[in-house]
Image (cartoon, rainbow over all chains, first blue to last red; front, side, top):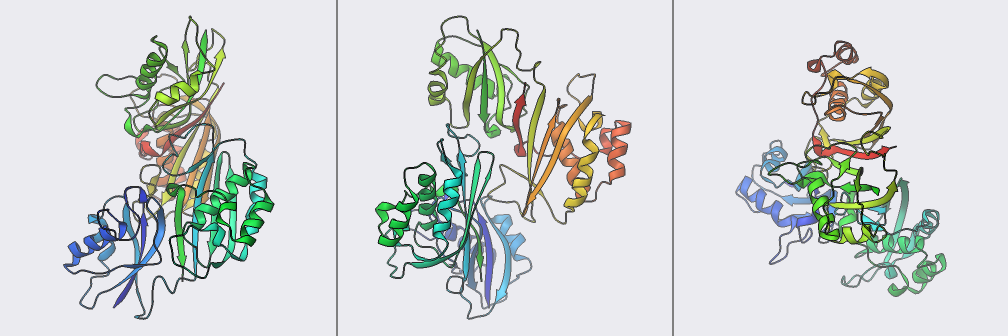
Length: 243
Length: 243
């Protein structure tokens, strides 16, 4: 039987989602705790990797178990032995042909920012800082450039061996409440570091280190150097995976 | 000369604002760092204490220095030696008769909540949890009962030796975005644990452990036992002190 779980985690103390030698991953912690609970090794297949330090409100992963599995007891039992910074929010049975990565239709990410002359004691681990002055209206103008289908090669880091760099962004919302800005972005998929580079590009636009024309040019010429820098991982949250 | 500083801190690792023997307070850290910077001991007088674990976006405190004081250099220099979880946001000169506590006209606190069946890995240190089911509309109804001038004795913990327990609440706003609720409360002053007990009372109302009538009765009879419980310190933020 194939099971799909929804996971919330604070990425601060992990090398990312994916298993790595010599570093602790979220995947490894959950697989080890499932083994502790079931006495059986399972292999988790997630909707995608998240990098070191990136958080998730709703990561998804599937696994198979062919013997008896006490699904009803599972979330409570596994959460009791998982650390505070990783919890299973939901489990459901899925079709044997379902795949957490390949069947993902859309993903929603959130990027959290604040505007301040000083590094915030309260938000240093959860938000990225923008040093004032900052033009939020200009940032909102820039956000429109990313909507719809484009080649996002300029807004990705090399490292993946992905050939098709065309993606569709359905929604890029920016909300400012007092000194905090929340960016919420929904797309059919995201290239390596793409959300962090879009965040960095929009911040540089609002800081007037880049212009709207620069962003258009980056997109057309697929030139990574024309886009903004990759903003920090600790402010990025995988909010939801839509199947 | 009297100086007024604005301080942001994450209260997690401190016994509260106020100096205590055998425990590290925010006040002591700042006083020690000012001594390190100036070679002179100052005594900070804050707008009020915050309890162990409580955070502040805008705590205020005054101190006196009669010799030369490099005020312009102060914030940058002191922030360089302060720990990451305490920073000075602003400094200004005030009148010699000004007092950070006695001249405070209003204070604004924020209390952060989320509704979830599981303890949130991302919000466990910053928000308090409400276990569903929860009636947010009923919570909003209850909030109106606290507005204006009342005797808030039922909504305070003993421990202070305060005789006048009458306070005025100018504003109590509740905003729900997805599974998060933010309570913002502005008053002319707050009794010991008052914001945390109002938060606890409104949560118990939404959980139907208390009724609107219970809250009215608590207020009229000044009976602490009729109100809700004191909710956790880690979700409370002193947002602003108004002079």
